Length: 381
Image (cartoon, rainbow, N blue to C red; front, side):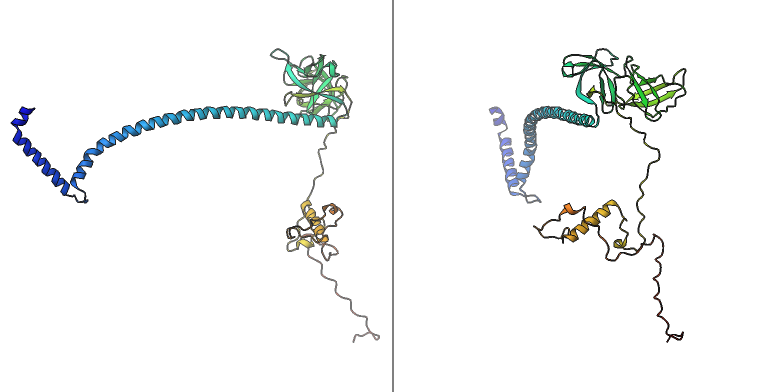
């Protein structure tokens, strides 16, 4: 190295002097942006290295921060999933409790409307087998349940008890082929026997060809089987086909349409009348005609308007009687006594016309005054 410097000493010194001169010139000279050239050179040289260093620093810090955040996000997601699962379970539980309360209320209301003595029960299981038509309920002989008692719901009959154990009972559903019950049509009074087929639909057997029954008719228990009292709904006739010697009638049971969860066991059955058929022609309500054009509202007849209008008139009359203006009384004012609403007469106009003209007719002209009596002599003066 020393031999190289000794050999090129003059050139080296010259280059150092030139470099020093350039540095001094760059330090003194400014560009068009009033920035020294030395600063421009320094920034130009240092910027790429600084950018590269900043990229490495930002990438490493960002990677570490994102890793920590992702780890926290995974933990938060796990916690939220657990909370959502817990809330779903609580929601299903509360929904089931609400449905149970509603079903219990419906059963209680149904028991109050019926004269038969009933015992509420819950379905706790079904017998084994793919096409089973037997269920078990949580009421048994210890609570008075006996073999042969009827099982119903507010929608219709369900089956009958075929075995009673101390704390449970076995119920044969109406869809079982071994089930049979006497039924009668609501509309025509045709009697027959309801039998199960092992399918969701039952059949009504022993209906002669000459008896008239149509699809859509409602069937009720007839009481002939000595199991189901008369007057309990059974189902709707879905199809009727003529055959020999009896008609082929398919029935859709109404007691099994909503599933089986809560049932009623008839401890003491009482026969009731079958509901009457709703008449085809029912009376129809017609609203009063609209008032004539230009007729003030306060001159309408007393019976005009809807029920809400008449009730509003009663409230208005009650407020006028008690010197109460709705919405305009000061704070602390005594409210009107609504217990006298039934005794308050409806608002009446100041002058009631003798007879209101019919809508669309002209008002009759006023009767002209009668002339005064003529003086003696037969001439008016």
